Image (tube, rainbow, N blue to C red; front, side, top):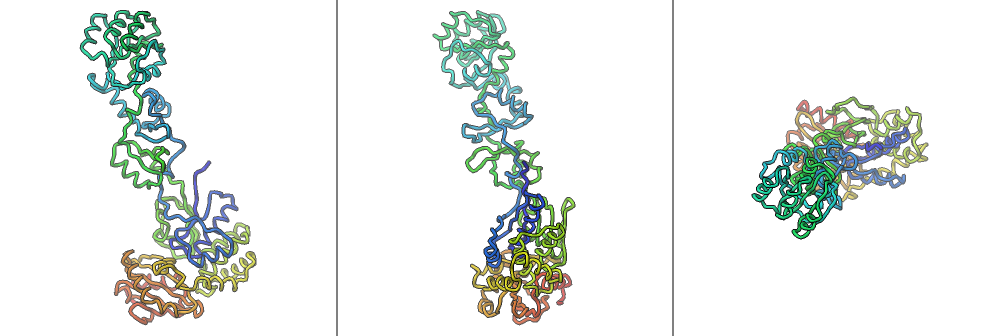
Length: 553
């Protein structure tokens, strides 16, 4: 089953056209069999859009605060693990069989307690000094028995673990006895075959474990003596060489787990995990869920895996306006009606940009091209986005195709175009409806860049300028704060009177930038824009040209 999720999403601070075109295009994709496609939004809904969705009975799209690839996006299936009580030989079998270099160690609840790293284990087991690493093993009689598949002839404190030294009784009885006397016999694991003298001396000296290899017999009196001395005797079906190696690998892996392996959570950004792994020596990191249970392993290899999240951008084509993280995931398509920004992709994509009044107009045209009629609710959404962006078909961006689409969509949605349009703007015209000055300024705020200058313009529609003039001072102060917070050279609010079809521009910023705004200046921070109702087609081209040329007009 594919994990891919394709989100159709508009710009930050989404307006009605952005939201409605996202829902409309996602619906078209699903009708065409692309069931993984769903609509999303890159910010809160404005009052106008909320009114439209409520009126048409459509749920708001999922909100994505960012799409930065996260650990959860690059994990594969169930993680391969080993329980902390398992012997090392079991872990090595898993690593060899699965061809992995790092194996997480977990407890009964699936919580991670470090990991086994093959390179470090190899060095520890086979390259250690004889006085320590290569002879010594942290284990218990029970663990040795499990590793060897041995039969216990007698057991003493079988679960008690300790650091034991392995000795092979392959020399003469006298020589081996002298060799063992030079050690601490209570820490010794002696492996031998049917050497009766070695068996008896090992028991008499009180070794911790005696392993008789090859399934060879052990005299009853030796077993009886072992019980009296507290010595465990195991009968291994394997030969001495194999038994010695398996005993060496009998340590429960919880003692060998490397707890310095970094741990990350599922919501960590992939770019942050890359930095962690590049700075450290571990081949990977352990990914855990909110309860600390292991969810997977992130390696340097799968950090290169593409994110399962992919995007279709609507109503914008500039990454500066896109949902944060859009530059780090694959963009499959762009559907827009704005000027081309500084946009590039690594692979060819489906890019549709048409000089129409709204992105909803472009989407409605795609329905026609596909020979598919939008459902009633979707037709209503596309109509709403079209009417909103063209300001009731009065904006200079409006084309004959937009007007024809409006009539067609109105019929499909069962809505009167004029009445529906008026209700849309009536629901969103009050400045006082916004919860704060910041919300009013940024709800429909877009940022641009020209010649190293960065500026942003918001827009609100009103049916009278009276309320605006009453709040002008606090709005101007809010724009000053917005310049400071976002490091803008200029921030403005285009206040459009949909009745008179004209606007006022309230702006704050660098003095030389304000001087480049070549509209009649009513005050230091206020400009009159008669006949201007489109930010996209009238105001922004003027500002971009003025900032580029450095001259008014």
